[in-house]
Image (cartoon, rainbow, N blue to C red):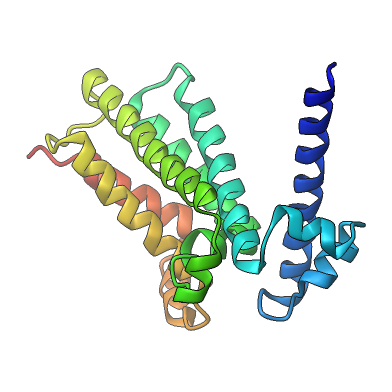
Length: 216
């Protein structure tokens, strides 16, 4: 392995350590109470080294969003390669998505809330990571579109709506699920689910079944 490859591997290793430290601290203390000094200490790096990789917490949080999107992208791509009806592919993608937002609050908040930054944070943000996040979001949408196209072709999806428009509808539903998981005022929603002996995956499945069975 050459010098350049070794340096790049070390750079990636340090970035992973920083992100792992940031995620664990944010899970413990919340975003606002977590400091860059604490992140550097948890990652066993100097504060100066930390700032070589991330200018501030806004940049770090965006990198966490990228990691979440990349994880979801890898999951969707793996599912798409399975030999099963398109409707089942989409269903498995949605279950994978729900697992992610239920199991990692920091990932969930990063995916939904990063866009609500102020102008000062926008000036400091790493626009390369921003562009990567946008690209990943677009690719996630197209993976859902491809699964829907397969479903239309194999007959497991009856909806005649353009798969791209149907994918947008599913995307809106996904955003709603994220908001539901994040909000502190969802007690009424949980009550309604309990009264109907349902959980979020059941609700998502019913939504998909409704969309897939529409003839027009």
